[in-house]
Image (tube, rainbow, N blue to C red):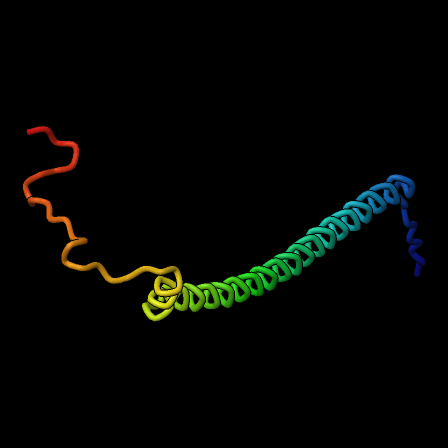
Length: 112
């Protein structure tokens, strides 16, 4: 029986290494690009979360200020306060002699 010899023919090992290195480099670059994109998205999401929180705090502050200003307006417009101020300033209720009647059909600035 004859022993068959197997001879392994190797291709250009330098070319194989270059192709492998190029593929490996492309995969590494792709992974890095995806990682950077993922991190960028996460950072942007966190930043937007902080902006939303700040906006909500500002909205709550504005609503509280609006309530305080509305209460202050109601206090300043109250008839009791206005009447008291008028009395302090010497105002009095008009008498019949103080009233001036104008005909309804006459408009101010209209010539007859």
